[in-house]
Image (cartoon, rainbow, N blue to C red):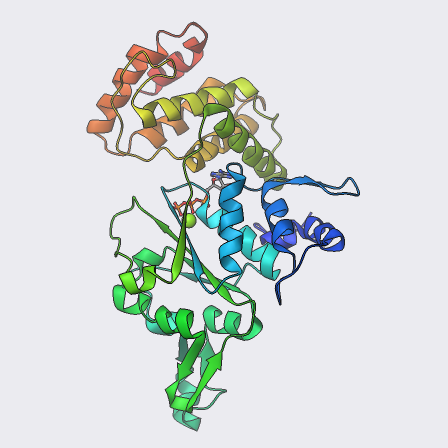
Length: 359
Ligand SMILES: Nc1ncnc2c1ncn2[C@@H]1O[C@H](COP(=O)(O)OP(=O)(O)OP(=O)(O)O)[C@@H](O)[C@H]1O
Ligand SMILES: [Mg+2]
């Protein structure tokens, strides 16, 4: 096992990518590692003709992945849009890994992202010593992707200021990055494209300018359709967490995951699973990603401070932490949920007790 805390997708799934490449028979766009169909198989999972099993990365609608992959073969860039924790970054990483064999050409968008982080910068010591030369120029991941014919990833595009966002327009429409200081331009090689992610919930978001919007195809990643799908996502992610962290804990019982997912979905939807009781909605997003962390935290509690088997009290603190983001409002919402829903379920007595103990 590697010492690296978190391997890139192309390292972690190197074998799957290699098998897919061997068996790949479809037309491969220039500089793509795999044909579009194989990219979708890599994302959705499946059995190859030789019996090799590819694990699913994205759980959900296959059509969305087909649209995403098809977009990247055109001259338009891809924007993955949706609520927090709907796998936008995750899908972006896996797409880049499967298409370019490299998911690391990434720009993290923040309010402070400058044009130099998107286009290019200068090594000032060299700039002063030599003047503007090719050696003094500092390439960005976007510039490198253009030269290598690979996918560049821009995370949280809408956190970047509008003026900096607009520096992408020339890159996307002309496929060229002018460097006036050197009286030249970098022309993108085939295979280059951009995958951006943006979420529609977090504050401090800059609207995407309409000029830029027209250069992106937007794929909206939805919250999981139903309980079973969400349980499946959480289970798979928790399994891989256990493996990576080498926790001395037993995999959580299916029933524990079901309860966490049920609590999250009911609070998110404002109604109990049977549709009978209305409940108040807390301010947090209660995303699938947070459900995954609650179970992961519980596992760690069980492994190091319990007998290795996850119990309701290992999970309660995590659930409460995820639900109560606003100490006043959310607390009331949660207390009401505990008393009107959790308390009344016969087989949830242990959760009820664990939650009350933490109050
Ligand atoms: N439909 C899904 N299929 C597979 N994994 C999922 C799915 N939904 C959520 N996940 C898991 O949730 C976790 C968080 O996903 P990710 O970080 O990509 O979210 P995001 O949409 O980028 O959120 P944010 O807006 O906060 O950046 C990942 O570990 C991912 O595996
Ligand atoms: Mg993200």
